[in-house]
Length: 279
Ligand code: NDP
Image (cartoon, rainbow, N blue to C red; front, side, top):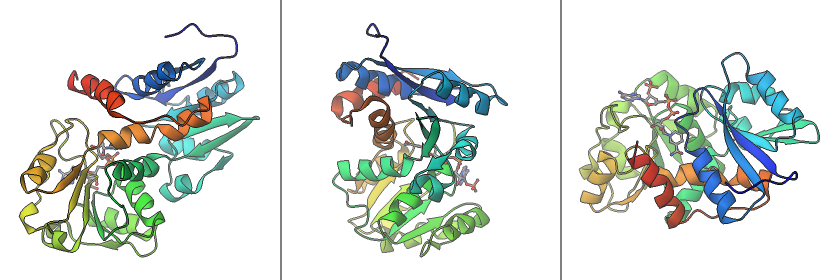
């Protein structure tokens, strides 16, 4: 880390625990690349202390913070103002402290869409099937719906799929057991479940039933190449892995705190992927 001046801007990632987070690595890479007088630090905030910790950071002159598990809903409740994405998603992952006010945003949907575009995939080119209805699926559905894409959700627990679809106009639901059969009607399928993560079991999806132009996106990034993406490649389908979303979602916060919209490129991908591979 470079020597900081008295003018240094400081931000960090608040969660409990935060030891698993790759955000300090991502932001640290950019701070070094752009030779910025700033720092980005892990902020392990004990349960019950989130509000005090965030107001304390703001009072101490921090530029802002990323928010991870389990505080994204508490962050939502804390904000003085927030952007449309945070409102639509119902959770906040980025805080900016400015002029005594706390502004919240949710950049996961932005990260997902930016990553698709990085892979030359038009997110709204055709109907999208989103598998899952948890926090990540919410951000994906919000991102796609904001672009006017036609979205259908399939989730193991149907009530959660219905509840997510009800937050957006024109979003449909299909039974979990029909997820393979409906593939042929979609140009994009997104795994937003935790299936495929190391130790979580595999997502069963019959890609043999898909349209040849189907794009298969997986939000899981540990492992980087999931069994789903391997199978998709085997079927000659285009794939998008989860690492790019993780990197792109960090951009708006970095720009707000440090004044540069940073680039996501191969060097950064390799820097973070090497860390993921090392556990
Ligand atoms: P949640 O716990 O909020 O949601 C988990 C989802 O997975 C639910 O839809 C759940 O279904 C489904 N699920 C879990 N187990 C099974 C199973 N055995 N069979 C079928 N469905 C199952 O998790 P998140 O939404 O926060 O995260 C989901 C994934 O996205 C994780 O792998 C996470 O790492 C990844 N992620 C990646 C990001 C990135 O930047 N690339 C950002 C955020 C998340 P049900 O409702 O029925 O329980």
